[in-house]
Amino acid sequence: MKQTKYITLLLVFVHSMGYAQTFDLDDELQEISGLEMLDDSTFVALNDGGDKAVIYLLDIRGKITKKVKIENAKNVDWEDIAVDKKHLYIADVGNNLNERKDLVIYKVSIKKVREKKEVEAKKIKIKYKEQKEFPPEKANMRFDVEAITVYNDSIFLFTKSRANPTDGMTWVYKVPTSAGEYKLKKKNEIFIGRNGFLKDAVTAVDVNGNNFYLSTYNRILKRTYSNGTFSGQTEMKYENFSQKESLVVTISGGIVVADEKRFLFGGPKLYYLVPNFEKKSKD
Image (cartoon, rainbow, N blue to C red; front, side):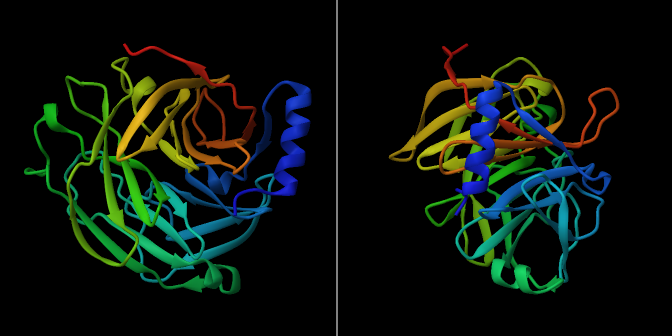
């Protein structure tokens, strides 16, 4: 579903040039925080909290081709988007202050998104069993999420820890793709690093086979999921530092990311990257 002859040809070109190809995004996407692929030539994207409840269809160079309104939704803090064969999952789970009690993932028909300009969503409402206070004390500020993906009929959520002091972990939760209300229990922890919020906070995720790709602002970490656990220690550093909060991995292993518009860092841009992962030992 994510593999495309257009993407493949473009990545061959990128590889031959030896650097990442980039495309400017429209300023209407200056808060882009989620990116996925609908088919062999179409991205779907969304903006961060405060924007309208709208998703954007893009061509492979990032040009907006269509806008679709989600009728029964509100963009409180949209942070990521995921797909399966029939649906989009829009994650309104941003929780910077760890005080929200209205976390929801909107489930939308891909078929309707293609056909209409306004669609309704089903709702997957979530809470975390580990969260007892709203907000918790600083040492337990673990309930912000900016990264989701779909794997084997479940939505995986990876936390962006704001705990101080930090243990360097992202917590992993799972929720069914069926509409309903769920209280989630932590399933896993993955060590990211203790080098501060700008380097080691998880901002995006995608999955290819059994490999999960976790993005921070400065690198991508690849971890393999098997028998309910994550393993592996390979990473790939970005060539530039910017507010990258969107990540797509194609079936062939090509990587596409997008960053938000920020003073000094530039953006918004769409980057095609040549994977170059190296093994890294644990801190």
